[in-house]
Length: 340
Image (cartoon, rainbow, N blue to C red; front, side, top):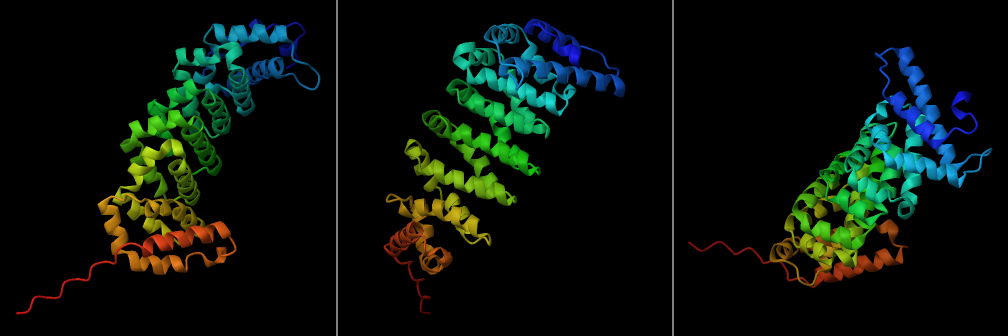
């Protein structure tokens, strides 16, 4: 591959060579496909070295400027993503490295404006989670995008946002965990933006979110519960919290989760459940459920996770919860049968 790195080769040469290789007709020949993958890997490697340098080459500002100009001056970035399957693993990683470089210097290179003018880029990056070889690199690039509030807003308001509820349940553990990390960034990086989005789209988002919490996958369930607690307890999300904790169906779900055999599921459910109990202005349906189950809840929580008795904060929160439940009215005794 030395011919790819001949001295003095310009960014324009590399971009043009990459475009030519992407347009080649391989006729599904294994030999042709392998040769093209080899060339594409070389071109992407040279781009990465131009931008980042390597142990033998320091990055040169003039070469970087020329390459970035060519990358943003045409449709090559789009073509890279459209032809993702043509690249082998290392080539895909280098594509992510190129995008990350540009995004980290967003103000300098106007990459945010470029992506906004080509909205299919974000859509293709999200769909990268369908490719297990590219998924982790996709996540890296998407989280770089999310650092820019305008791109985060584009992602939140795109139909692609709702695909994260599926990606977070992928059978591949690494892919699912990375997708959840990106999902969490979308909902926490820019708090005011996320709060407005969640409130405006409350029904659709939390219907899908509750399904995520009830997923069979242990890790997904635990991560979702933990994030839900963070979202509800953030001051920016006060109106969302009030809406969520006044819904009796949400309370029923949390009470079931409290009794799950996995201790960490119980623990994360506890931190959401306590918000329902602590609310001084409970809706009548929520209050009725708590009153109806008051005795059982007090008995259950009194012995709840006794192995954490050395955790002062947990013990304090549990005692506050027990006191709040104690202060509720007792459930009404069933009326005696009428005398005949």
